[in-house]
Length: 284
Image: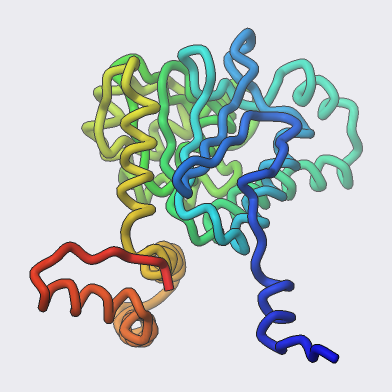
């Protein structure tokens, strides 16, 4: 009689693979441990629907347990990133919904941002063309952003009679581009060009539209080749330290770094340095 290992039971409940995942409402592929999400309704500039919001939220939650995905790229098909919530599939139905269902919707969209921030893999947004409303939020919630000169970033909520405080925008956007610049975009709903977004720090760099996706995937591959467990710790601390004092942050980072020092990747890096070779990280 074979007695199952307790560790195997632990792994079964906390590890999964997603390379063979079949997305229903967007494109999904995994190559060399880099997952690519493609918002693929190009005829309408890739808007989100109730269904795609929910599927994205659930997928990012599952990514916390994926062993075969180390980094993620999100982009849009057809020369645009995402035009936000679909006017016909989302905005029109919302007008007729009572408050409990409205709150159900706004919590669902916020949960997508929470799932993106809490999944350990770095997320690279490849932003070309229109990046508006909830699409701007998806880019904002990513860890790194590559744009193009023709990127058009707009937080459009005030244009439809809503507040700019949507899906964490008032908390996250000021930390990326500064309070005054964030206030301008959130109050006015105006579009920021690619050059402006780059100058303000929203985009890490601008790329040629023809190479944007390849550039984003190469960045993701470079990250996937690094110490991915440690990358997950870095992402967690970047998120967690927003609400900490400096003393609390320093102590938390001391604990986090001690955890990383116990990994095999730390040992691999030392041995490679001693042997004057390049370390091969395995994420453990």
